[in-house]
Length: 388
Image 1 (cartoon, one colour):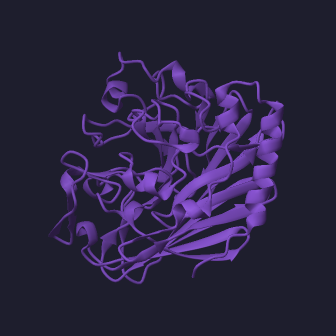
Image 2 (tube, rainbow, N blue to C red):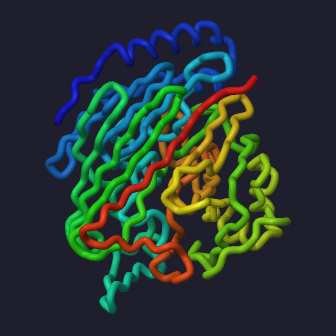
């Protein structure tokens, strides 16, 4: 269903941002870009493979979001900073053509069928081997080259604060078995909270590991590096990887390593510590953290990140057992993002709620096998607040 854009949402933020821009017209470039206005629906009017691309707007209180059905992507998310000014904390393009031509295919995207990597693109179920699309060296990453991030989803705006996206992944798509029916629901809740609910069902045994690949900067778009962001992750263990970022097969303690985020720690404190083998392997942080959960499937607090300039804090809650922390290691200033800026090195981070990488080949990891007549369901929450 095509949705009519409520212009009042855009007018509200254009007015707020314009007024604030007048107050800080002599401030630096970072402040100006931090107050970047809401993306425009007209910049997403296009078709792909005969399907209409669109842009949807959600609002609840002081928080607004823009989501495109191309890849089920979170395009913008405005939350108040410590002075009450709206800040867009999502790094990435704001025009469909920039998404389509970007060398970074995952900006803000819904990821599937399998978030993260599967070694050598090989999947075995009941003794039958399936060859998946290989798009990351010899491995499959985020569902393959034409995974869910490249598909046009059907969208239905339930109300001002809720959007449902649906996609049917056909049997054999990117090599995965089974027709997989997927629904993702974005909901803006009170107190500047974004909830993402994932549901899926299949007619054949398959694997399923869905997530969102939002690129965050809590100081706002164009505000510079993430080195001074402080991160806390509720994980006593992390998953070491090889040079292809495939798990070595066991989890290790974070104690006395650069992966110890059990207390709030600056990203920049250890991210460039090349004396550590795992930091060298990931070119920074690109690792799964094993969350200290009471039980998989229960919604529990997982992580907290604080922006040093805006005072914006993001708390992450998830039903998933793992969290992939990515520190923008492959950002190379090659792609246009909002405000005519570039995706400069380490100007964004990702926290991808997930089952562990390469679980189909790791019997000690929680399974990602999905059976017919069984519903896949998981939820993650991103809650924003401020401190002075």
